[in-house]
Every structure is written in C-alpha cells, then in structure tokens.
Length: 447
Image (tube, rainbow, N blue to C red; front, side, top):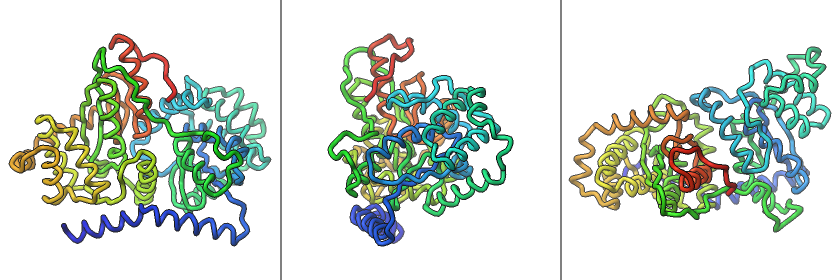
C-alpha cells in the first residue's frame, strides 16, 4: 500500500468520523450559547430552482415545530463549475420536482416550464420585497407557483411596483446572499444550514430535523418527521414480466456506492434484470467538480450511509488509473456473470474499505472476492475495449436527459438521477408488473 493511499484513507476516515462530527456540533452549539444567539437555521432560496420552491413550502411547518429562528437569503444560481451540464440539470429538475411534490404533498405545477430571465428577475423582486415585510412564506408559494405555471397575470399582480424598484438594491441583496453561502461553504440553492452543517432541500430535511431534535429544539418530540426519507418498500411480486433496470454508475461516485447494493436488492425483490451501465467519472469526461462540492458530497454520503446501514468513510479516490482499471475488469466481469458482485465490491473498496483500485493489491483483491482469477483480471487489464462500452453508456445517459451517476430507469421509461430516487424506480417497477410492458406507468405510489 502506497503512502498516498495510507494518508488518503486516514484523512477521510478522520473527516467522516462520528467523533469529529460530534465535536463539531458541540462546538458550534457552545459558540452560539456563549454569544447569546438564538438557534438559527439559514435557508438559501434560488428563485429559478424547482427544489427551492418545494423547500420554501415547508418553512411554516419548520417554524411551528422547532424552536429555531429561520433566516432567509436570496441567492443566484450556482456557478457553471458547480452545475455541470446546466441545460440537462434544469430540464430534469422540472420533471423531478413534479414527482417529488406529488409524493410529499407539496405544490408544483404539472405543466411547469423553464422561466425566462426577465420572469425570474420579477420573482426575485417580489421575494426581496416580501423579505422586507416578513411575508416570504406566502410570497414564495404564490409568486413561485405563478412563475412555474407561466401565470404572468398573477405574477404582475403580485409585483405592481416592480418598475420602481432599484435594480442595484436587488443585485446587492443577491450578492449578499451569495457571499453568505460561500462564507458558510456551499454553492447550491434550496439549502438549509444549521450550526456548521448543510442539508439539501426536502430530501435532507429529515437529517436537519434529527439535528434540531438532538439540540432539544423539537416542540413535538416523538412525532413523525415533517419530511422523512423515502425508501423502496421491496414488496414487489417476482412473478409476471421481468423488466430490465438500467443502472449508470461511476467508480468515483460515492452516491453510486450507496445506490448499487440497494438497486440490486430492489431488482431481486421485483424479479427484474439489472443491467450495469458503467461510465467514466465526471472529471475524466471534462466536467468540473469543485473542492467545496466534493467536501459536501463526502459528508452528506456519510450521513446517508449511516441511515442506510452501509459502511462509508475510508476513501481512496479512484480517479484516473483506479477508475480506468476497475472499468476494464468490470467489462470482462459482466460477460463472465460476476459484474454486479465486482461492481459492488469495487465501490465498497473505494469508499468504505480504503483500498486503492489503482494498485494491484486493491484491484486484484476485489476481483478475487468477486470470483475472478488473477489470469482473468490480467487479461481484462490488457484489453482496452471497455472504453467503447463506457462511451456507449455515456451517450445513452445523455440521450436519457441525464449526465451523472448514479442514474437508473426501466428500459424505455424516464430515467432518474440520485441514490435517493430508488423509490421512484420502484413505482415504475410496480407499474410494469401490473400492466403490459408497452403501457405507460400508472399512478405514483408514495413510499
């Protein structure tokens, strides 16, 4: 094991350790008490972000249930480096928010369309005025819904004074929000921040609620969370048609590690075939991943891994040679019938065990555990044809309207992005099992 590997696994183990997190939380709480500060949640709202529109709708319930002040900042969209393939991200966000809203009992227009820049600017002005008069919650829902629904008449009625508002003052408000977001260490809209930790929208609200409860701020202890995490029920019938689940993943994606074992379990529960579609990591495809984004993802994955009961934290980044070598071996492992096992063990090695896929000890160890001989592994490493498979998979992912890992779908159906969307995949499996394959999926089922 190289010195680089030892240092990397040690550093990441320390970064993700529960002990470090407890100390950071205790220190943040102590500082707040010493300053005489009221516990404060900071919420960063991006006007043209569908997930912000959903997150804003839970603010009244958060205020009512938890003894914490909520401070709201308006922010602009993230920089290009933090939002790769922005066009696909924005288009997918509409579709994802519509389905997420239905499942969580929130409002998002079923016919929502991407708003024009002038319309976004108008909504920002409405929200800025609402903040000044402490009416943000109502304005965010009413004006936000109008914008997403393309209801210009309603938006105009909510902003009759817009022409008289100072453009400079609105720009200054957005810049202050962006500066505060950067100061605290993030890049996205729809984010909640509490005493040193970040929580993304309604999807991570359960973690925030747990944190607030641990601080003794829950006015209704023991009651169900406002926004619990959704998981598949795994109640599917194995009989009937056997749909194919396509799974795009990357050996450098920690979320792929959280997704793949559960996707295998889900496919088995529903009698579905799992088709692995490995792709190169984003940075090896020319897509930037800023340091601030890597840090947030790592800490978020640790929380999610604990919730899911998966090991996580000893990380050796496989970018470069590690990812390429793992893809080469996987290419052969799939054809030999052990692709799923190798993929899962390879991801576990990179993100839980701290084994370097770029080194023979790590890669050959994974391959042996998956059932490959050393000769088969060596032959795979000498074969460059995996690159063609990875490129075909990348092109198929883009054609599906997505760009990153993990992503998945039932063949021929809409694709989903993110390890926290497996419940949506189960909805489609349920529909596929209860209707002929050529028919459209039925109504969504809330997990």
